Length: 181
Image (cartoon, rainbow, N blue to C red):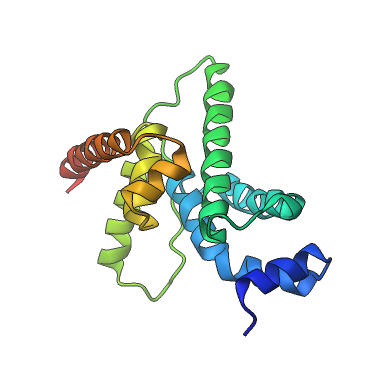
């Protein structure tokens, strides 16, 4: 198996197979980040694809100072936040309120324990109910498993802000989930 730095170098040289391998290695993590931010919506697929398009276009600018997974997660968070802003603008033009309207989540694994799937769906819905600045921290810390320091770097925030947003985001999630359970 080829090491990641070598795959990056090969992709820079135009090797499409090397780029495909990089995508395959990171697509689940990118998708988890985007779905955590946007919900399991059609736009999430588009945003996840856009992450890799942006990465491909910026291959020559990737210096390797950060891990590739960190770099891709930052792109995913930024594009997700942009999509959330678009949604907000789009729905502000509507003359009727769409509050409370929830999109139905798709369950990917048909063999998954139904109780676990229900809990996952509730958590996903609850995540969509909290503000994007809290959601980003919760997704990065609790879904993607980044440390407070890494989350702070990804979001360009002080570590104390990350810690307080995480605490507030968790409290908001807990309150929402208590109402549903």
